[in-house]
Image 1: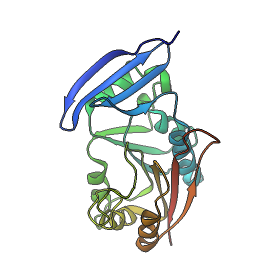
Image 2: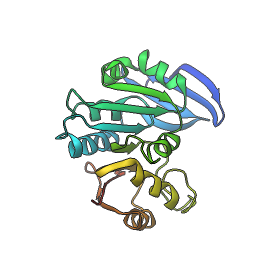
Image 3: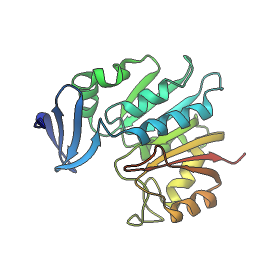
Length: 225
């Protein structure tokens, strides 16, 4: 028998009602206005996103990593598992309630990931964090990981989109150290985004993790030295 979903918590946000639901022992959903943002049982591309980005910088003595979006903490967990003890990982998350969920209801899902000593969390738009790091004299990141519920696609403004537009990509490359990595989750491949990556100065690979079912895309781009 299929078990029903139960609401554990919800809060009003500028984008609508953000809600956490649970079914059984380990099935969780995060929704906004009843639209599913994350499902704890469908996360292979998010895990691949963290793993691939982290592997690309793991040989550095103390890599600095920025992750945009905390979600259920699974991408963060996958990232940390591939990084050395001296790494510094900053997570930019818009909603403090999501941090609370990862400290409480979702803590067991990702092994209390937000309490890892390598992690610092900012209640901040990741676009703002990238803009700060892009300023002259600012400390750059070795990897920037964008794990948001909407990836690049045809509906975005190709110039002004705050994450995937051409102006944003220029700031992102300025926020990265030489050879730095920019990893992005998306619903599907987007050739226009790929052209903007190349124009901004990135070399990139497109990955389709897993076999069968819903195969999302992970872009792993590297700043040309």
